[in-house]
Length: 205
Image (cartoon, rainbow, N blue to C red; front, side, top):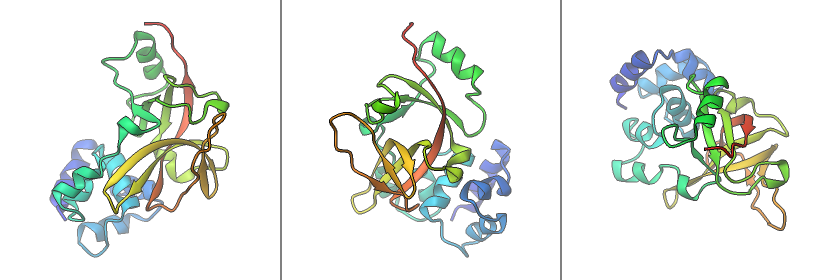
C-alpha cells in the first residue's frame, strides 16, 4: 500500500478522508485502516478512491498493492466496447462544451459522457447523445435511475462500461428487438459508477 502517494494525491486534489469514505458509504476510519494495511482495498473502495482522487481504477489497485502492474492495466475499463465513453471536450462541439459547462461539468464527481450504443433507446438515449453523470451519487441509486456501471470479469482481467436502467438489484437494457443481459449489482463484479442526471442531443458542429 503506497499510502504516501494517496495522501499526497488527497492534498493536491483537496479531498478529505470523509469524502472518500462517503463515496463508499462508510466511515472515514476505514480509510485510515486501508492506509495502515489493516483493511483490504476492495473493488468498491478502489472505485471510491478512483472517483474522489481522479485516478484510473487500475492505478489505484496497483498502488494499493492489490494487483501486479501488468494485471492492473488489464482492468482499465473497456471504453471502446462499452455503451458510453468519457466526453473529450477538445474534440466535441462548441454547443456541447457550452452545455457541459452550464450543467456543472468539471466539478468534482460530475463528468460528461457520450452514448455509444442503443442500449437504452426505448428510454430516449440515442447513440451520440451527451450525458452528465454524477459519480458522487453512485451509492444512492434508486429504482428507475439511469446509471453508468462497470461490469468486471476479474478471471480474465476485463471490464466494460454499460448504460442501464437500475431495477434493484439488477441493471437492465431497454432496446427494441434486442435481448440484453441482466447484470446483478453486487459491488464486486458489477458496480454502479454514477447516475445520469441530465442528457442532451446536439446536432450542430
